[in-house]
Length: 552
Image (cartoon, rainbow, N blue to C red):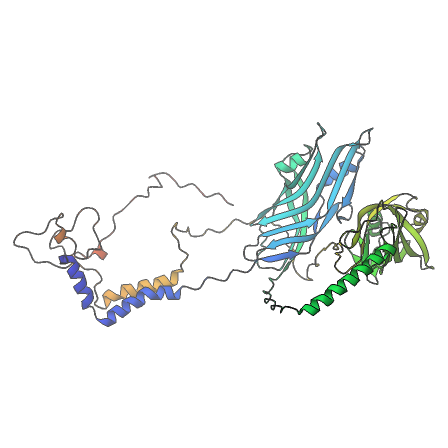
């Protein structure tokens, strides 16, 4: 048999009209129905293409080339220069979250510094920084790079990957919601790891040159449909294909014996870094144009669509390429076209039709490079970043700016025998920022406006739907429907139940007490009307001022 209090609750609920029960259910369900659906999270985007420009530290470059260190630097991996004080790294790859603005971008290219040459030919100062990457989130970021350096005291060479070189201060730049990342002049400071990489020449916290970067993002690709299931081929068809493969193999063997025709080929060459700087500098005040299919790789020029022959056994090859390169400026008019590469007797030669000052074209050998062995792997003969030297004829091409045997920019030659052979990718500098699109540049971060403190148990539910539900609940007593009211009980001739009598407890049962026992019999006070007891905040001692929140 149920206790008296439980029977009272069941009887009270059962006695409520159906309309009242319906209103109660609406008051409970309405706040949940009004809760808006969470916004969809934008898919993470893939980064493909872009550049990072960084001068590292201008005083360091001055020191390297100055009278004390008497050193220099060499570029590698397609890295280039911007003016005379910045290095450009290329081909951004990584990820971008449009919702949070988080960026993870990796770039290609490297620069190798040397200084303080010893009598043995070795250098006391050696530092290589390559393949930089950035990690950006919130208002800050970190620049990483692969580093190879020589300790100036012990001479020991250390090599590390993904060293945190610099801390980046974005200064309130919001990277959310875009498709192209563009940042200019981001302040950078040396980290403790970076100070070690610089062999102690600089201390952690020292300022570095600002960083500028771009990165293009790709929209998430739609899922590809599943390929249809191929039906098994008849036995006769498989035998015919086998015969065809045998014939192809025999033809290839014959080609290997007497040379093979090239399917495609490219040659990458930047002429010479200092010449490019001279062209765009204040003396020549000029530029260059790429024509007839030539491509710009930032620090190099690509002449594509090579056709020719290769004989690996004889160690010979010849390829002719498309494209033209035209330099113009004050007192300068130089055009290179009909570029070709010949390889024989362990030496490669870049040949071009040269036109100066609008005159007649002359076919001249411009630079030479060493080819110790002509090796074909995966149907590709590749010579990557091989040093070149200027020929006597080439020295005449440049009007006496450089003497014969002067070292020019390295050359990359790729000769493909089949369609499956993979040519090296051209450095991808990404798209130029859209016209009229503001370029993000860090600014001082304003102090945030005060916001209401969130509860530790905040569920993120919106306030308005909850207030609507609460208003409906509070309207029920006004309609004559008591939610919780203690029943007036007649005096028991045997005495009211005491606090320890389980049958004389609060008839609601679920409300409980405040820890001091049940109310005395005959008390007609409504529980909802009882004022809360005053309490002191245990986390704020009386009389102790709350410390001000520091500005961020």
